[in-house]
Length: 249
Image (cartoon, rainbow, N blue to C red; front, side, top):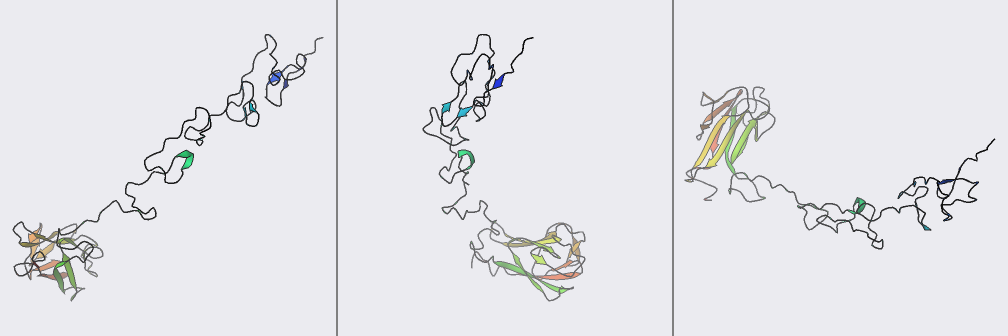
């Protein structure tokens, strides 16, 4: 009866060989395999597994060294054929993951710790005010009846929204006024330099009145007109007009 000796796996390269035909691994020792002996596939190519790259001693037989220095594993200038990683715009600002530096914001200022905001604040009222200064008042609303009786509210150029809790004019305590944008009062200057005031509805459910008449669309607002909104009455007092203008001083 024929006894077949099982193949032995080399502890160095991981290949299998016949110990009856080879006293030592024919792959590690450099001996040619016997005719007809199958060549098993290489294991661990490029990833440090058995039969792969042996850093201290170079390459094992049939092994392929791991790829180095192409963008993701760090650049090794001494490696043959190494390609340096591509650097994005703003390179030189720190080291990022995989050899890529962090993208630098196009809105960054000279200081790396304090970046300027990409958004500019909306300037209301054209050139009435000074940048960074107080927004000029153009008139007032004074509550003459209702929960906030005796309270005055400043008006500025552009839209002034009226609400119970939010807005430019907040009339607290009047439950018939919407929380925000119930109505609006607007100020602008015509091309001829004339000051113009308007009052109109916004998102409120209850109708507003001007001098006792319902206002369904924006209507001109004159000095000492009375606006009824909810249970409150507001008298309008204009600052700008024939006698004064912020543009004329």
